[in-house]
Image (cartoon, rainbow, N blue to C red; front, side, top):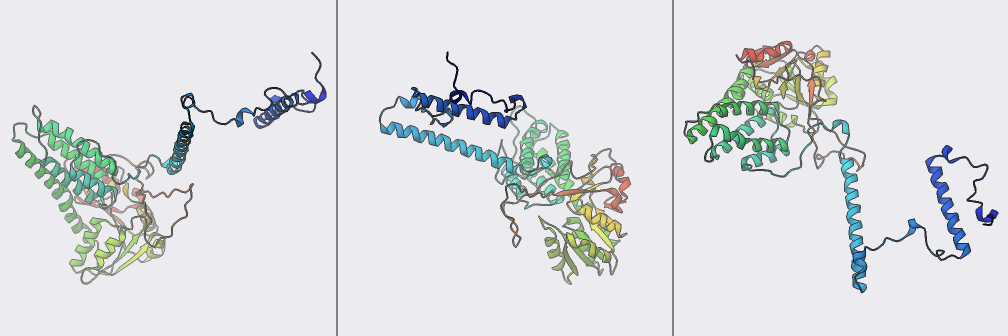
Length: 444
């Protein structure tokens, strides 16, 4: 075999100045391989071989599947091309959907938060119409506040119980629990369950399991509905009346009361104190995205004579705290270690008030007590996301790497709280764990 000339083998032979492939990077090795392939193709073209007119493998047009090659005529060929174009379009759209899904997932560090569900999500199982309607109201945030959500849930369960019929060879105390499970699951899929709903549902299941199996079905359902009414009356309505009386004694003429967002209990306290003839002013501090303080401001100013109010957003809080005499806050739940789980921004209000030596009173019913211990608002939370921005708000430009994060709750440490006002009295945060004993129970 003749030795290769310099022209034919100048690219096949490794130059002495070229480094070895082990010392080259991956990109450099790939570039070297491409040059070698181009040199071989040029050599074959110069010799005029049978494969001279062939193109490289990477430039070959896509081959038609064998099933499409069997078809004859121009129509079959055009149909095959359309089929390939359709498949390519589907693949491209699927890839785009995957990319958008990756962008919409947001920061993975917040993936454990309760994400907002789309309105009208899928309905699984035999769901009562009252539960479906309530789930839509929850997902749209038409019903906000732990008390309002708990009352709405128990009222919907009364309709479910009244429309329930025990199947043959079953008892109400056992089968009704199975019937309520998908209803609860549907509500949780609409929006994460609150502590108040969990405590109320736990008490309802306890009442159902204790139902007399020899009682007539309709009578048993009436008894359960009466138990629900008693729970709402004793643990929420009457508890709020006692809290109004206890907290109202701490409001005097000339006081400046500061509150954050909107709490139904705080609103009742302020309106009740105004009806008693006390003259005071209120500072309503609010923040996005819900801006619940606007509804509180509207209710406080529509009474006669209207309560003097000041409305401000959260950034203005430090400049207003110097005028405040008392801070009244609501709560979503109360942990066993004395921490208050409430609307995001509550912790900031309490800490600034403590810095200015302003007493902070948290108004909370005992049925919001939770046996768990929370150390921060990161381990458990809920996100709020709206499809349309609020009115008269600057619209952020569409950025694929931008994801708006709106945590709904935060955790206020017990060191920033002066006292917790409950229906069993004013309790210091260090004695929160004694609430069950004050009610004569080991657990709530």
